[in-house]
Image (tube, rainbow, N blue to C red; front, side, top):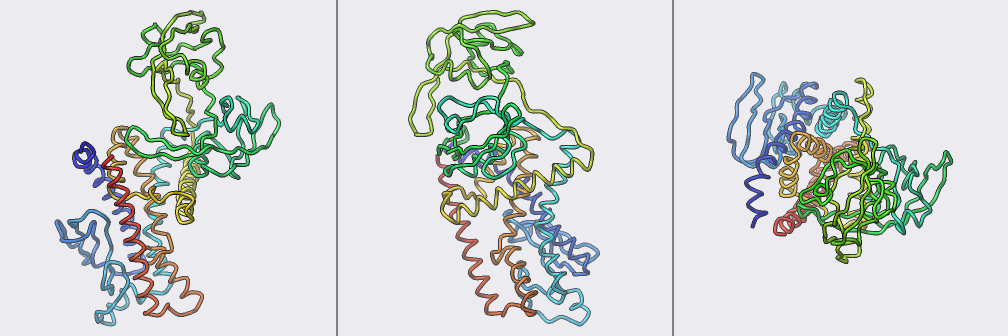
Length: 458
């Protein structure tokens, strides 16, 4: 019940705001390219169904906001439906010059491509602005290896720097996390640098499924390694025994029960079985060492095998390790394009895995999950909302490029057929394709909605 209440009170307003913005960007891409070719747009609608608000501009285009905020469309002259699929009304000779279906093949393809391209360009522009103003977030790909984990079994040591993983170049630690998300079962070839030498190996990840604080299911391949972080206190969580014992932000942990703390993620290994038991902590502050005694808080966790256990926690957060690379305008554009390309390849890889049953279909999400994500992003302030807008803009763009009739990619596939064969696909074949495409889109929507409802009722 709480999830349903939150949907309408917290999530829905952000969902409508974000989706409206992205739909406008997408449809404006179609509209803008169409205008460049002299095609007349009769209707530009945000949403479907009855018109709530609208006006007609001097070019005769009706701009409107409709009752169902789950998409939008541009209806060009000569189209008898919002999908630009048919054209059956009679037109004058002058109108035919400005109709969509009478345009050359390259013009029609450009108009169709304009929507997805606008979403991708919008994401690049947002990222470019962020990277130029604040710098590009960068976390070094130097790792801390957990004892007896998959990485340790593959021969990696703490302090190694990953160069390639699963056949992809590793430029920052976030690239490792992307690989964990995409490849959770099959062995990954790895290249890493140690003492200036390039070494190779193969990591067999352990499948892991976790539920976050928002009840979202996360599946990934546990590699048994973390980012190498200095053992410096960056903050405390509520009821921290470390804070109660006198530690302060900026203190560096030197030893626990006499064992050196070499990196932050080594702390759980030192106190994991010490919940409720006093431990001796040595830390440095302003060049001097201090020792105190504290009792780690007990916390229940579930490992990748689903087994629940109790571990000790100091309830401290690490000091920030993310660096920010400064860019000029061209560098920021390049970084923006690189990030959007990475998100695009992740999307298509994930979709291919769903279609080949190597990734469960319950990861498909619909409007409710998007609304939930929008609400959760709001807790991160404008940065959280901005990250969501960028991610969803990329998803909206690349999803519409799938070669499925009813989507932009389906139209492009038909235009490719026309370019190769020298004639359009037959009307019966087009009608069959639209029916199949409609069934596929509705099927995906039903599966996504079913998944959304299950998530909401958790």
